[in-house]
Image (tube, rainbow, N blue to C red; front, side, top):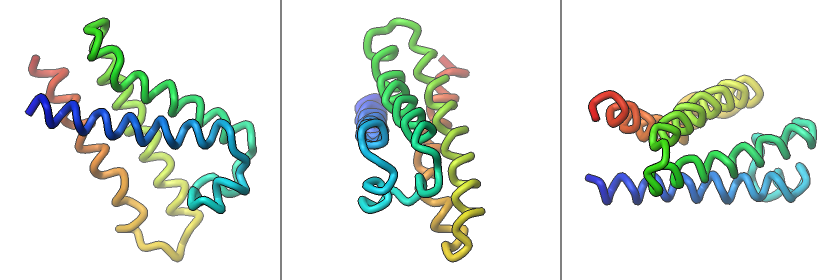
Length: 125
C-alpha cells in the first residue's frame, strides 16, 4: 500500500509540476493550442499565478512527507488541490455547456480519491 501510495502521489505531483511550469512560461494562446482549454479567457496574470501555485503545490505533495518535516503539510496541500480542482471543474462546466457533466467531473475524481487517502492517513495515524 505504501509503495502504491508513493507512486500515485509522485505521478500527481509530476502532473501538477508539468502543468504549472507550462502555465508559468507560456502564453494563454499557446496553452489553449496545446489543449489546456481551461485557461481560455483568463487574464495572463491569473494564469501565471495558477502555474506558480501548481508548482509550489507539487513540491508540497512530496517534500514534507519525504523528509518527515511537518508531513501533515502534504495532507493540507492535497486538500487545497482538491478544493482548487473542484472550483475549476465548476467554473469550466459553467463555461462549456457542450461538454457532458460526466466528462467535466471525471478528471478530478481520481485526485479527490487520493485526498480521501490523505485524510484517512491524517485521522487514523
